[in-house]
Amino acid sequence: MKGLDFTTLLTNIQDNYIEEADKYAKKKNTTPTLLIKAACAALVLGLIGSLYVGIQNSFKTDVLLLTVSAKELGMEEYTFGVSLPEIVYSDEEKVIIYDFRGIYIYSYKSQELIGFSDFRPINMTLIQGSNPTCVEVSGDGKYVKFYNENFKYLYDVTLNKTEQVEFYADIDKGFNSYNIEALPFGDSNSLTKDQITYIGTDNALVAVDLDYDFNAENSDVLRYKNLIILKQTGNDIIEYRLFE
Amino acid sequence: MNDNEIIELYNQRSETAIDETKKKYHSYLMTIADNILYNKEDSEECVSDTYLKTWNAIPPTVPTCLQAFLGKITRNVALNKLRNDTRQKRAANKYYIQLDELDNILRAEYDIESKICQKQMLKIIDMFLADLPIDKRIIFVRRYWYFDSIKDISKRMNISESNVKITLKRQRDTLKKILNKEGYL
Image 1 (cartoon, each protein chain N blue to C red):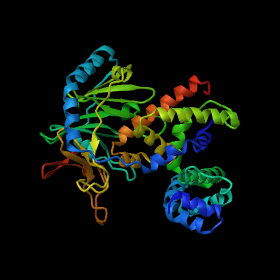
Image 2: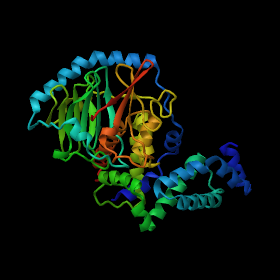
Image 3: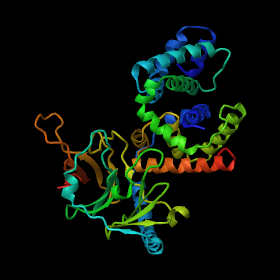
Image 4: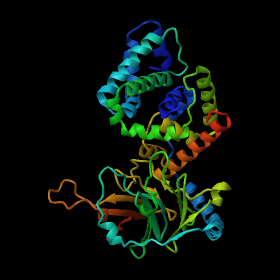
C-alpha cells in the first residue's frame, strides 16, 4: 500500500473531524495558567532531573564529546529556504535551540554559546520527513533527548556531553517532557513578524530572528552569525548574538 | 447565508447556489487544492470542478455538513489530478513530504482497492481519531487531510514545530501499531 492510496482513503474520515480542524483556534494563554504550569514544572524538576541522571548512568553506550566553536558555526552559510533554528527551551540563564546542524545552548548571562550537540557526525540531520529527528527537553532544561526510529541520544546540557542510549524511561512510562509555550502567531506582543514568539519558564518572551538586510546590494553572504535571539523581560528587549 | 439555505438552493436548481457556495467556501477550497497541487491555476480549475460536481450531486445527495462535503470533493479532485500529472508530482515537494510520512506507516502491499478493506480501514482510522484528544486530532487532520506544513500547524496551534513533529511521529507510530494489530500490515 502506498501513501497516495492511504491519503485518498483518509479523504472520507468523519465530517466533524474535518470541520473541527478548520474552525479550531487555540485561545491565547493567560498568565495564571502559565504560573500554574510553572509551579507544576518546578515541582517535577527534581523528579525528572534525577530520572534522567538515572537513565544516563544506566544505559550509556558510546560517549560523544563534540566541541565546535561558536565562531566556526557562525561562519557557516545560512541556506535560504531552511527554517530558522527553533527554540525548545528558555529560562533565566539559557536558551536551547536546534536545527538540522544540532542543538545549541546559549547563556544569556555570559552571552556566549556554552554547548553544542552536533547532529552531523551521527547522521541525525533530517529534521523533517518520515523519520525525523525529534527533540525534547527535560522540565529543568538540563537534558535534551533527540531520537529517530533508529537511534536515541541524550545530551547533558550541564556537561555539554552527548551519548547514545538504548531507551528513554520517561517515554516508556508516559512522563511528559517540557513543551515551551508560544504566543498566538501574529499576536500584538510578538517580538517578530515572521517567527513564533515563545514564553520561557521565567515568563520572558523569546524569538529567533535574522539581522540581515536582504535588499542591500553589498551584503555579505547570509551566515549563521546573522542569527539573533530576542528576549523581552518587562519592557526591555535584549538582542543576543549566538555565533559571534 | 447558512449551509441549509445553500443546500436548499441546490435542491431548487437555482444557480445562485454556486455563487453562495463560492462566497462562503472559495478560499477554504482553494487552500485545500493549493496545498496538494501547489499551483494557483490548477487549484482554480480543481475548485471549479468541485462546484460542478456539487451541482450534479445535490440533489439527490443531502450533505450533513456542506463544508466537509465540498472539501472532500476538492481533495479527491486534486489528488486525482496529481496522480495523473507527473509534472505536478515533481513540483509538489511540500505535498510529497506528507505522502512520504504516510507511506512509511503503510509499507506492506495490501489490497487497498478492495471496497471492504477500505471501509474497515476507514472505521479503524475514525476510531483512532476519536480516541485522540482534540488538539492532537486537529494536528493529525491538519497535516494529513489538509496537508498543512509543520510551520503552519505550529502557528495555528501555538506550539513549537518540534512539538508538532513529535506529536505526528507518535500518532503515526500508534496508527501503525493499531493497523498491524488488526492485520493490515
